[in-house]
Image (tube, rainbow, N blue to C red; front, side):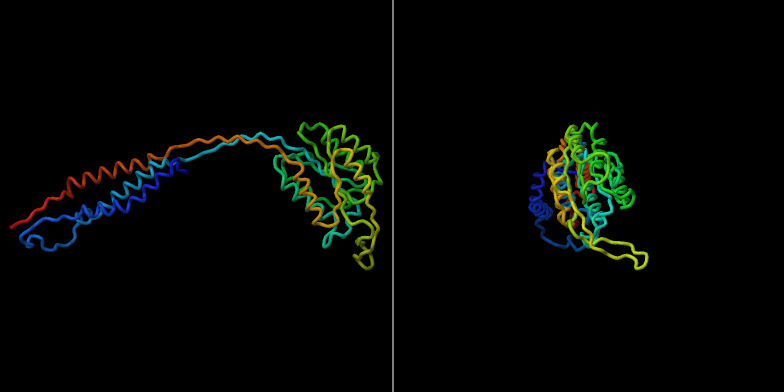
Amino acid sequence: MIFRHPAFFLLLLLIPFIWTLAKRRQKLELPFSTFSCLEKRPWTLRMMLYKMLPCLRVLVLVLLITAMARPCHVSSDREFQTHGLDIMISLDLSGSMLAEDFQPENRIYVAKQEAVKFIQGRENDRIGLVVFAKKAFTQCPLTLDYRILIELLSELRVGMIADGTAIGMGIATAVNRLRDSDAKSKVLILITDGANNSGNIDPITAAELARTFDIKIYTIAVGRGGLVPFPIDDPLFGKRYVQANVEIDEMTLKRIADITGGLFFRARDPQSLSEIYEKINRLEKSEVKVKEYKSYKELFPIFLVPVLLLLLIDILFRQTVLLKVPKCNS
């Protein structure tokens, strides 16, 4: 509920003065030669009602001022015109993503967590997911159901696909999902930590294909590169760590981004990966136009009807049971 004319509530400041005036008018002063006819008598119901009359008039005034302030119940309806984006995330599931240079977690864990935050920060955009290692697959087509998308993302594990790094296939599979899109902007976020060593399509050719369909690619290289701690399940001693050399092909990733008009990022720790997603989030914004319609239901009768009833009661009482007629029996 809102009030269309709240300035009328300033009239409430007059109530103390009206109350004082009403109390003064209740006092009767008549000259009598003797007080014998005005002996003290017990309080009666009529006397109590008479004392309450000023309160009744103040209540009438409060309700009247509230009605004048035009209370309304507002209902609104919004019409959204959205020009969202279509975004595909292509995530590397090769064995090297188990490297634990993103302490205390490995690369794939951090990559998934930050992807979830990115998805949760979007609105009105269709987002899909492609995964690749030796081969590439669509884990989730373009969708607005972010809950399902996040569930599918959380289920990803290294080893689901034969080991390898088919960056070109990861791009091409995502392009195949985006090519028929009629969205204002089509974006591919490629996340990998290695160099292309598998697949039938090389990354540059896949990038040229993406450019043909006006798809912008943001490439993210995760990991420090060089010697990194890598877990190994030893049948005799259990899990242990070795220093493995993981090379990241930055030149190719930069070339992919340049060809499609995107950007290349290097994420050496979880914080930098989070900042990269935030930067992409700012760069790729959806256009949303909102038209809002409001309807008002007047509520002043709810306050005005009691005012009329209370005024009627006041008049009836004053002209009947509370009629003031001084009387003295000598």
